[in-house]
Length: 392
Image (tube, rainbow, N blue to C red; front, side, top):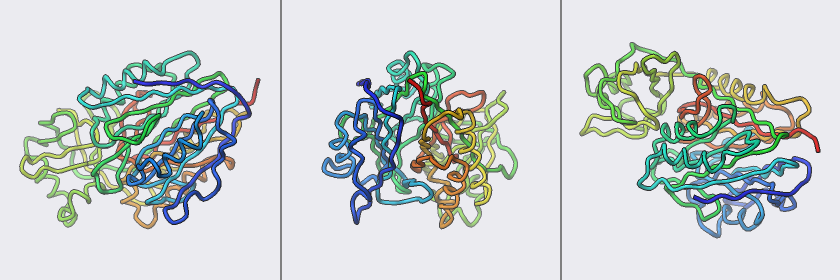
């Protein structure tokens, strides 16, 4: 575990940064913003993890700042979804301070890792936490539970699981070191003038009869209503069954645990034909009721706008510039196809004009669930909005 705190000053401001493989950084990096109160957040293609690449360049360009980055399944730059490049933001606080923490998940329970990160970040005037994690070697549900166990209920928590396009081969996280797998990293925002808002929405609707989860282990589903899960799922998909596992991103599963009013959505990561099992990005509890889900482009856009509006709804009128970090699911990108920019435009329209809107497509989104608890979502648009009130 490692951590670092920030100290120093100037008015809160933010600048978007973008790197393209055919032209490098679109504009000169705003290195004048480098300070112990500065956070650089970046999302990049999985292949951009070399020390002499753009992520390493950010670390060298902002030596006094906290630099947090992860691989993605697509980069969000304002109203445009990119592939193969890097998108991010540099934000410097006036009076607020920052602290970051990093932990390895190799051979460890994800919930313990979440609790450890929470313990490292909990402190006076903690307002919010942004977290990124290896996207394949972690139980995201347990990681979110661990963060929720250790952080005060009023702290806004958001983030996501790193991606690798639609390949699901390898992911990385970088914080205070070169990009690597098996890593979870988070940054905390502190100060009486710091303001945080979080919004999350899906836009998916269930179809078909509900099925009882009769056998599962963590995030691996074996049986629905006593029948092997994979054949049953194939029957529902019809013509789409021949395109599994890729087509599973278009038909996620809604899971409502016994005694719970709300449901969580789960994305399928892998299918084991021999075992007849399906591995999801989050837990699928035994005895829960599961429904297949579907959506339309219009519904996904409406949900993105709702998430954005919710993230800024509680920000005060005397605030400064807003940074909106969007974490959307890779399944939404694939479902939207050529219309993916429509989702981002809908979210951007619901944000203030001065907002810097960046983010990434993920293998799972961390944010508030039923009752405000920190949970892992799939197939949502989750947005963390950050700002700072003017004041001494």
